[in-house]
Length: 245
Image (cartoon, rainbow, N blue to C red; front, side):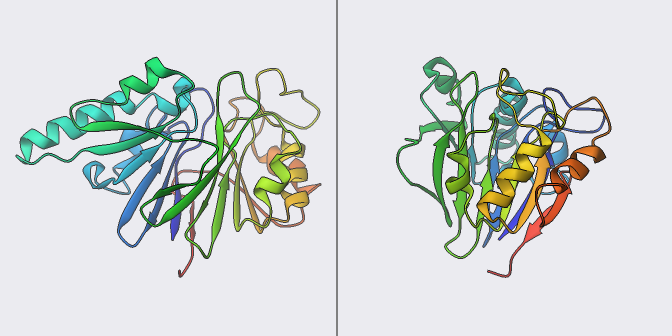
């Protein structure tokens, strides 16, 4: 299993970057998690776009879905160029039915997931937790049966995150604010909250993502490290986590 960062900025991408997007691969199966602004440009450094097998979305804010339209065009154009049609399944929730409807295009098909149920996509099993965010948003716990990755998506801190993240091999935590700030209004976490969550849940490694455009982001790692004794990394393009199984 390999998990790789495609985009990690919050709100909008900085030059040569992308907002939230991650690639999870195993046994030739490629699952894209969120598809923010700049994703397609950066994704092509890792995989041919039409080799994607599925896309899953945590929620429908622009910085997590902005490149879905270009992704749909890419599959459509390539279907003409290659004279073969491949339909990409796009998994989303029904919290915004109008947006969910837009996930279906000539070469993509929107498939609704029920966040109260376990979802199987290729070799991966996914469970969900609704987060604290202004729109319906779901954290994901993804496993191949032997290793587990948790992606918080966008959320302010709340206690139910701890059991959801328990003993994960890797926690990708959104870290939009610095210690001492209050992210509860816009529905985001601070660096110290990320560290406390990782420590309480006993995760093996913590990545800070959904990074802010102000301050010195290296400070986020320092602040989280005051509360978490494990390995911490700032998300960056192509940062990779791999297992042998």
